Length: 464
Image (cartoon, rainbow, N blue to C red):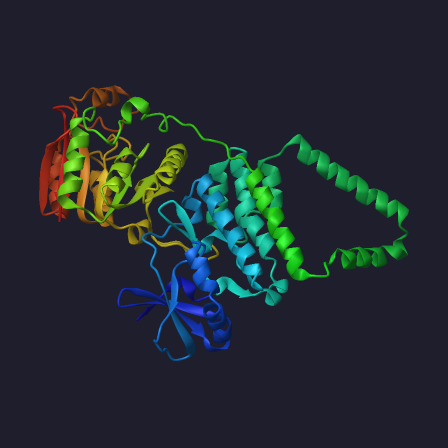
């Protein structure tokens, strides 16, 4: 039995792994609340509506805990600072829908943060049962302020065209995004007008109301602002928050790499007539090896990610270009494909971050797949002579069984252009297939060369 290291701060329950299953042990004093959720069918209804991760009671017993539940395991763990804006917005809708439904049963969510949401493909799901509690206990938690800090404000920054800044703030943690940070980053004339108006009103009130009466007036206004029904007030606030989220129109990023694979380079999946030999090679690999999971690195428009998903694999797509990730998320959601698109530069993978408000495990630990595809032009993944052993070793850490990469020789027109560029990183004389194969043989027992788009390119199927 292995306790989950990131659930230690939960005062209600504790996650642990046992025999490849994921369980949640409920502390004895909180058992009646969760038994009520189960006996009345609240949890089952939330699961059916895909608002809550699949949860069931078990007969297991654990010292110090009065109830043990089991959860469906989500294929891959991702974090909000790896999501594009549309994913964060989908997670925000889920959190508010969950809170709205729970309030009809006298239950609420005290921790409205994206850290409690994971994606199954393109569908968000709430995973933290410990964040639920009686609505009467939520008065001391300003969870809607938490929602603003981790959902609404980052989305407003993204809508202003500063998605990278928003993701950096989410990763930093420590209370999420503050209102003053939104004002600084998205400074507009209207925001200045509002601040001036507020300052004018306060100054006018100070002139009208004598100093001895000001404390009395403040207490009276505060008392009048308190609703007679806390639950009704919370429902109203949730409705307002939902309206605010829907009003946010996210800026659609466009970069060089998002346009790299246009419609001409994105053939249909129903026929192979217009496919290149490279695409046919990858299809043969997928049909022959039948990987259960695939990590597509530097996936650009995500054609190979979609190909793998259409042939039965659970897919993670990792790219550092937000526009490409956003496009793939939209395409995968429309086609209902099991693809999780993430904004990650796998060249910069490192150890797990500290256990703060934004904890995280290393990508190689949570995104390991049966097969890894590294098929983008070789300069994008920096698989060059000086650094190839480091990059290949990092890619091999993600691959349980197979690594599929494309080698582009110096005779390829695309590579000739790069080698002639003084900024090019592939001009080393030792860059060749002969230097690459020994590096692969150190990590894999078998390397098979398959045809690609021309005589200067090869698809390499590496097998453990």
